[in-house]
Image 1 (tube, helix red, strand yellow):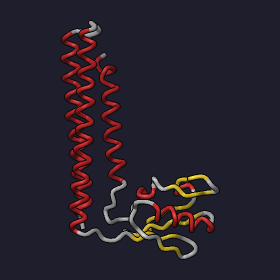
Image 2 (cartoon, rainbow, N blue to C red; image 1 turned 60 degrees about the vertical axis):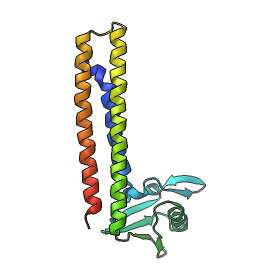
Image 3 (cartoon, rainbow, N blue to C red; image 1 turned 135 degrees about the vertical axis):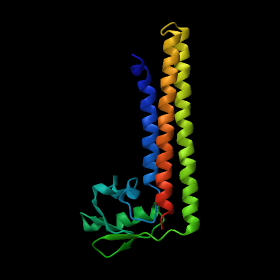
Length: 185
């Protein structure tokens, strides 16, 4: 019974963790990562289209992404989309494909990124704690409305605290992994 009452809060905590992981995918670690292009849209016959739908994206070397458009005339549009984005890399075009060469990260830039990673992790932990607070408020209201007993409320709050602790640990682990990835030269 108590599990069904916890479910909406645990779902929100899961979404918070997934959102953090997606944000981390967009942080450049000096390696080529096709996910960096996930938000990029190309003008394809007047419609903004995700870059993955107009060409093949592959990792040629550790620090080189190659975008092979299915229609050669799209090269200019893809180039414009990359230049207009916040990726910060100038594309090179050989007439058949576009190459993105990722520069090595400086020590200073790595430390900046590590700080940003920690800040995003802290924001995710605050979000999880806010979800816990909302859950506890909901359980108090249910007790007041006599929908649950005092013992049930205590059990629900205890279980929700356990879930919160678990998600905080998962967030810390995700932060540590990403920081390690960024700091590895």
